[in-house]
Length: 254
Image (cartoon, rainbow, N blue to C red):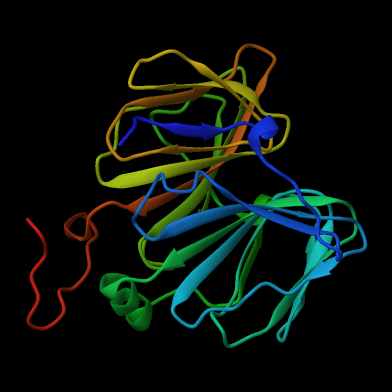
């Protein structure tokens, strides 16, 4: 497995259908752990009803454009970076664009550990959270003026976790975490450098997406006057690192 993968804006194909919707898979084939990520585009005035799954979690990161989501429980206004996870196949929903929208749709296959922990405890679904409503947290690998917010913590929706990092002229300088894989969705006015395993820095801009497999050190830092703003999205790499109960008759892998 490579140390990192990145897809730049000019590498993302956008082919709208007759309903003003486009969807393309990002970094296909780079990860075989059951997470597939798609960049979606929805033209102003258009609407889409995503496929629903009984055995997969779906989470959306709405990075650009205003719109709203309607499901059987409520309507949710998207006026800033926002997050939504439907209630599997139990609650139909539709996404409507007021302006041209761009967002990430991630579909996660549930393994036996995910199913067990979700059956025991999970965040209320459907889940919607605007970025400004997400709680802030402090982490020692981030600059003193870097803002970090938590969206979903471990065990709230299986093995995945979601948060954000935002700063001007600084960012994150993190030791490798072998327990989790990490994807990054760049939003806002992002124009920063990503360095993995002390290699050559690569430029990362708003709308782009990257994947850092579990292990290597990684920095995501902006030059003075430039913005770093990304959604980090993680999944535990091994069940033995995910603190859950072992099902009857089973053992965690060595």
